Length: 233
Image (cartoon, rainbow, N blue to C red; front, side, top):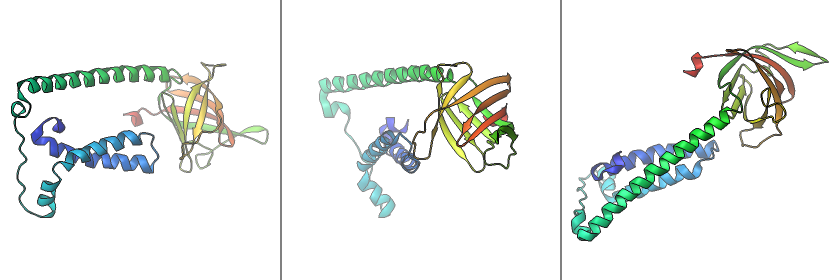
């Protein structure tokens, strides 16, 4: 909102530059795939600040008074015809932005609904029982074991399995052969490299209890999970 008015534009640009610098640095070092967007916002924020660079320098660095920057009225700069064109462009731009935002919101909701259908059990799940296949039989695991995922996170087509020693991210895809009983989990490492998909079988035991069976790294696991509603708030 500060960027919409001349009197507060410099303050808005300064706040936006600080915030987007933080976002851009996080995107760079964590390899988040929205670097171009954050870099564009940072660039335009700095571009707006550049118009007042001399005044900002005098005030913050030189510790001197800085005169206010004044702009002549639109009618003086553009004339009557120019003022009509100027305001018409403003209205047109506003309509385009609102329409584009509405279409983006609708497409985002549609995409979220389609992704939620891949695995409908969204939430934070805690492992209550776990077993690993070894030496020809299922052997129970304890939370101290590195193959014991203490928590599982599912949201739309994203999933995370983690414990104190491991944390793996996955993209979930529907298993066309068993769409209501199994899903494919594609592991991603910290460099966003993808591993071959692995099938995980799931079954809702109760509304707050979930059974999962699949392969995590080198271990074949059977998990019983409980939904933790407190961590979802």
